[in-house]
Image (cartoon, rainbow, N blue to C red; front, side, top):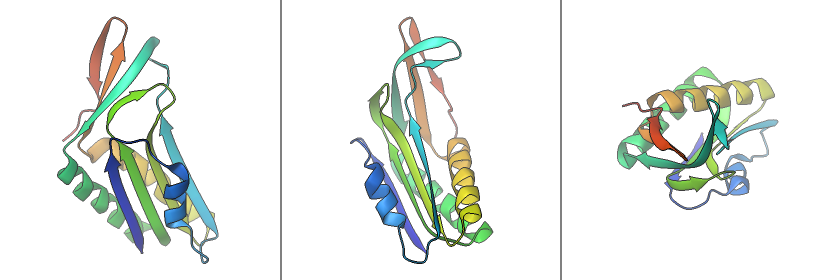
Length: 139
């Protein structure tokens, strides 16, 4: 099982993330790319700011990958998450999963992003013209 977990304040390289899970025995690679959108709940977003408790976030991401590997026959998983100030259109997170068959790749990828958003100590601040709010605050 190949695992690649990365947190960075630099722009994420989508193709590098995909390359880390590409294998000759993988019949499917599923990729989730989370980008900064320009509105939320009817309000215009100017930018997002991400902060993390990095050592704990990396440990939790590894735990999520281990859970995914126990549930589905995947070959490799890569999780790359960005921190710092992100502008509209910037890539905030990339998750790539490879498996022999597409169903396992799809299911493991969805589980990984859904669980990451619930449990990993990465906090997102949405900045609007008239203020800001922290969202998705979890442990």
